[in-house]
Amino acid sequence: MTEDKLTGYRGSLRKALESAGAEIGDRLEVTVNQQQYRGSLMPRVETYDDWHLIIKMVSGYNVGLAYNETMKINKVGTAPKPEFKQPPLPEAEKGLPKVSIISTGGTIASRVDYVTGGVISAMTSRDLLGIVPELVEVADVDADILYSVFSEDIGMEHWAGMAKRAYKKIKAGADGIIFTHGTDTMSYSSAAISFALQDLPCPVIFVGSQRSSDRPSSDNATNLMGGVYTAAHAPFAEVCIGLHENTSDESISYLRGTKVRKCHTSTRYAFQPVNDFPIARYKNGKIEMLNERYRPRQDSEPKLLNKFSDKATLIKFHPDYHPASLEYFLNEGFRGIIIEATGLGQVHQKLWPMVERARKDSVFVGIVSQCTWGRVNLNVYSHGRELVDRGAVPMEDMHGETAYVKLKWCLGQTEDLDEVKKLMRTNLVGEYNPRTPFLGRME
Figure 1 (cartoon, helix red, strand yellow):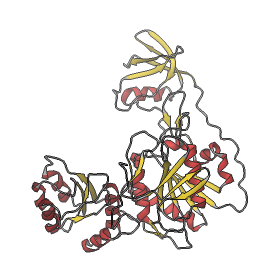
Figure 2 (cartoon, rainbow, N blue to C red; figure 1 turned 135 degrees about the horizontal axis):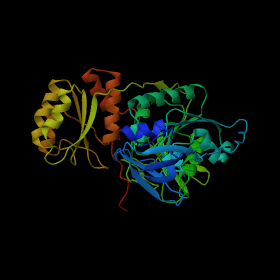
Figure 3 (cartoon, helix red, strand yellow; figure 1 turned 45 degrees about the vertical axis):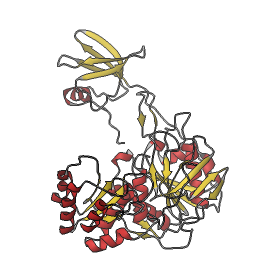
Figure 4 (tube, one colour; figure 1 turned 90 degrees about the horizontal axis):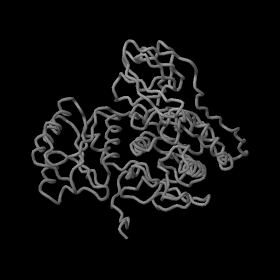
């Protein structure tokens, strides 16, 4: 979410705007083909052509002007820049639990820019506190920005930094951690922090929003309020994701960080547990525990294990999947591959030689299912047994995103294939269930 003062403009047109000292929102006087236009400079979609200048006229309409070398651009004024003034923050009561809010970006930290009409990252974590001043009634909150990026730009270097920052906050006395994060890759990050920060003494909760703060339907305040209360007072000490349980604002569901997936693009209840029950629910200012299996809050020394490898990948098998695609990763020196296979874990026999080669090259191959719920079983069909004979490892009821993240983490801890296999088969932070629970989803 790095701010670009000339969003979407490239090439000669961008140079002309820079020469005029123009930024998005500034008032310009543009002369082209002996015709003069006045208006505010508008941003452009980055993938569009690089020779159209767009300004918003006083009438409210946008006009696109084709750039050529005779175009004259004069800056005649600076448009009022959008400004967000945080209200003063009340002081927290003494003796309340300490909760640290660590911002990484995402919709929950975004708002509408009314000059351009776009959504921008204009809010700090302290701005979030200004929106929900009631937070000081439930916790002694401190907040800072770690990153300000879209969730699709977050990767293992961010995971390492997030784990390190949370570790420092816990060591400094935090009773709970909140990460504000974009929802699109939140399940990857929650899984990563689950492995990178173990033996937790307190909750680490990922909070996001499906709607930006300026929209009447925004869910950010409710998610943040519930998250802070839960981080401060919940009896569990795990990494989890906390967003709306349904379409209303009445409850927040807390889902284990290794057993959760974003299942809808835009609805408030986008996140659903995968082969697991929610850990807890926040409703009417109280926490209700929903799962008997959880790590309790305790006086423990957290472990920081935040090394990840870039030599792991996740591929999705499909009809007519070409073996050369799998061969590419072996040729490029990848040390681990997770295959999202069909149903119980089968792939076309054309891929078997590549799985056999992976074993010979000491490359880990793990098998997960493309299905959201259930577990793989490579002993049911002959194609599954053929994979096992060639060294593939079934990942039980772990879903693809978690298996991929865990593999990156395992390869960051050791390069020994046997050790990687041992770690991948070990239930470290609730990523496996010995028996997949019946969730009653169709009742």
